[in-house]
Image (cartoon, rainbow, N blue to C red; front, side, top):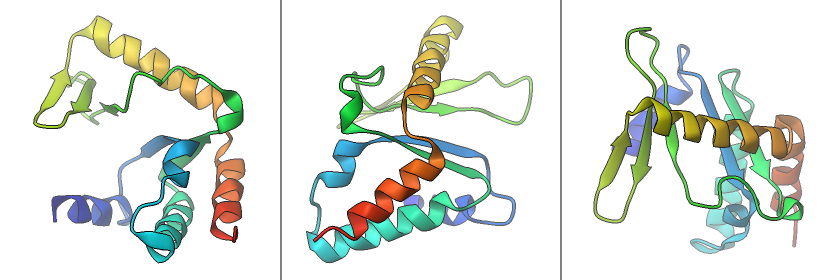
Length: 134
């Protein structure tokens, strides 16, 4: 329920800026059958068209990449006195990193991932291609 509420915020008129880099592997891993996967791909395409959303795909063809150590979320706040933090979700808990040097390392990885991934337009084309496979 919490994740669905967050999704509503993302596509609202004053939604926050959201930049995501997805590994292409996540788009090929079947979950819930063809219908569910098709609905997920359509949803990603729709959300990626939002002005506040930047969606990029790290293609298989790139090989090993800067984010191989696992998923993470960098959180930025509009208030200048609040520092960025990194959120790491784990199986039974979560970890929030707020030390400047640790956050800076994740920032560099995110910048590298963004530079090495497909552009938002090419990423959307890849999503359309996956949707029309079969």
